[in-house]
Length: 269
Image (cartoon, rainbow, N blue to C red; front, side, top):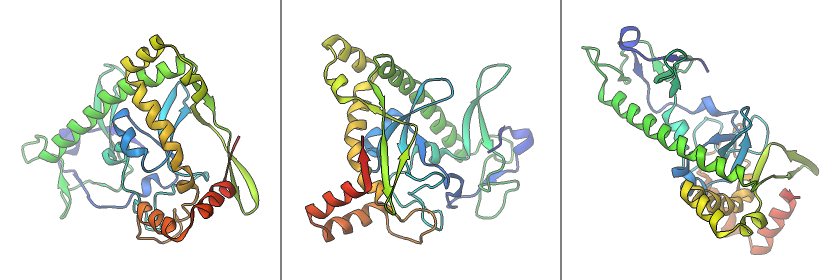
């Protein structure tokens, strides 16, 4: 990805193509999310914590268990789940910090095929004939600004969880073709430590908005077998959503079969 600032002088004639595929995230095994997304994302996939290059943790929706494969995309790079992370919905736009002024400015991925250099048929203009923001661009600005505001509060909440030392490495192992592979880099909340915090510590977590994140994270881990059993990712043609496939599996399998599926696919040390 190559981001550049959007401005009316340079990009007045540009437009955005809609209803394209999501090939841009085909290699993503996780996607950062904000606290407002936890409830929806938890119904789809595990929510995990990943250590970033600043030695802080990012809150992420887990998208795949194999390196370089997003299990929520089919062979046509269409999303097969019921919830698309906000970061993907805002693509190819992002609010980035301008180096000199330190201000947040709207940028776009100049390598994305979603941006047309001209006002082509079927695409939505980013500026009107006078160089003012189009209604579509105004909506994009509102959306990314709202994301940024919640991202900052999410960062503070996750930092409080980290400071209380509630996170532990998740030794997740996946069994494929009679071989056991380790999924590295994932962290989760230690339930025993969380249950053992004081009332004052709980209020600290509550005040930063961390409590809903923790509860959402813990409940989302039950979606792991569904993600592990999702073999419809990139490279396999499927028009069915993740939920459709899950319902079919549940209807066809007894509780014993589901328990065996979990046991065979996952080993959580």
